[in-house]
Image (tube, rainbow, N blue to C red; front, side, top):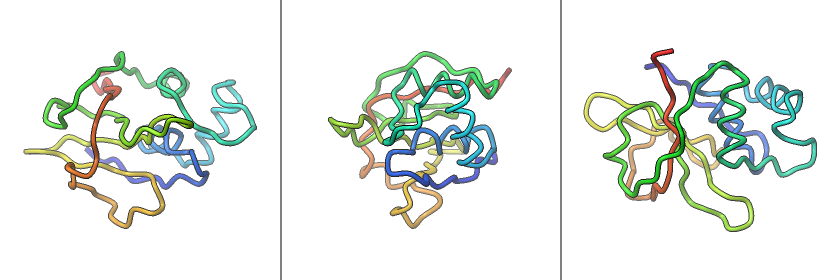
Amino acid sequence: MAIKRVIQLDDKGCGIACVAAVVGRSYTAVKRTSFAQGVHSYVQPYSTDIYELRSLLACHGIVSRPVRFTRSWKRIKELAIVGISRDLRYGWHWVVYVPGTGRGYVRDPSPTIQSARRVDFHRMPVRLYVAIDTTS
């Protein structure tokens, strides 16, 4: 499964970047769609909650499953956008989990993360995720 890393261009733009990675578009294009569809306002920060995330995926024709809660990366078996590192003011930091043979890996949109492919799961406490339906 070829999911390219998309770097967030705004402070709290990780949700937009994750959707961009899943749909294979640029951060700017997905951000534009987000504004046009009323998912986000033009006022920063562009933090994305679970409902906005699913709405933005739907705007791009992507079917997502309802949120699931877990504390184990091993329970995630499919392509998913995962909430890690909750910030009480802005919500979750979103990353993309890409399944693979064995464990899979994470595409983290944060510009401070050097690696395009993260496997340091012990440093990313998972709490919830939205699975992407890849059969549609």
